[in-house]
Length: 172
Image (cartoon, rainbow, N blue to C red; front, side, top):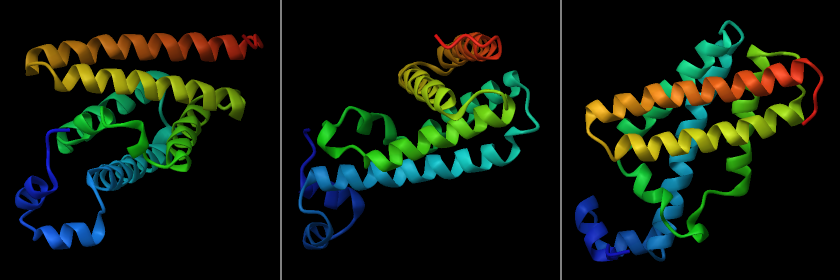
């Protein structure tokens, strides 16, 4: 909120006129960044999806957590953007695409789960990863690693419980 278009232009080493040529306001910049970051995250999920079939559930959990942590470390502006106004969110289609990519990874590891269930499980998984990201980035490296271990347990427990339940035929 405190950033001004002038400060953003200075930080980007761009003339203010050029900035306004492409972005009418800070919300436009924020939305463009969130969309670009979403597409980068999707590219990482596509790579994981390509190798997910050979992973165990634990392997999928480790890969999802590593992917998420690596993303946060390589995109330092990502977390502050999550607190931006909802009007700057990435398009709903991109959010749905990310859910579908995670769902495809889940189906690759556990082929018996139906697509609708996998999509719901993927939505929860992405929210769990978002929580990890926020805790991870706000702590010292030692505490960050501890949160990673905790979230591995949480995500593995959640996925195991949901997928075993689906395997038994329970629809709740």
